[in-house]
Amino acid sequence: MPAPYTVREMKAARTIAAFTVAVFVALALSIAARSDGATSNRERRFYNARAGVGVEAPPGWSLSAHTGYLNILCLLVHPSGSRISLAVDAAGTVKDAAALAEQSRAGLVAQGIEITGAAPGPRGGVVVDARIARRNQALRQLYLVRTVEGNPAWRQAIVLTLTTTSSDLAAASGALDWVIARLDLETPVRPDDKQNRPDGGG
Image (cartoon, rainbow, N blue to C red; front, side, top):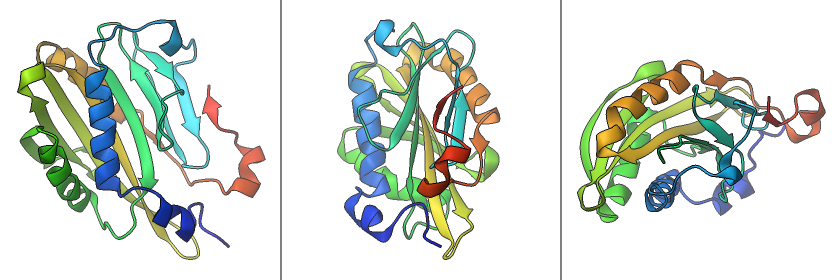
């Protein structure tokens, strides 16, 4: 029985480290923008069956499934401009969250992003704090790696990224904690079984 991510897909995808950097840079460049109709969604719940991952937007935040990136499944957007992204990819040879965070560190630093802290986080993950001082922007990420049973078993990388201003970090971090507490991790559904649990919000 094939795994949800094929070997070809894993080879074609960017490494999770480069992918994580791309996520942050894209969000950092747009942090000044306010929420508009394009990011508004009355549904606060999102679930992707193929990834087996779902999130819920905190009160006052809106949901967008139109991210422009294949592996960024959705964005949660606050009217202040703060954003939380949900990114999922095959982890390849990365064994755990600590290794995933470490692999991403060099790429973040190369983009001029200063890592200010890293510590064990909820759900067996690692929380990384960073900033871009020249833009007054702050980053907080939760890295997770989980094993998905299959034949063969494989590992999945999940990254929740909060991008906000330094002055909004305290308030926005509470929203990130809210999202983490409600993060839904299920068994990914193979493409031929998707009719049993469709993708999307709700």
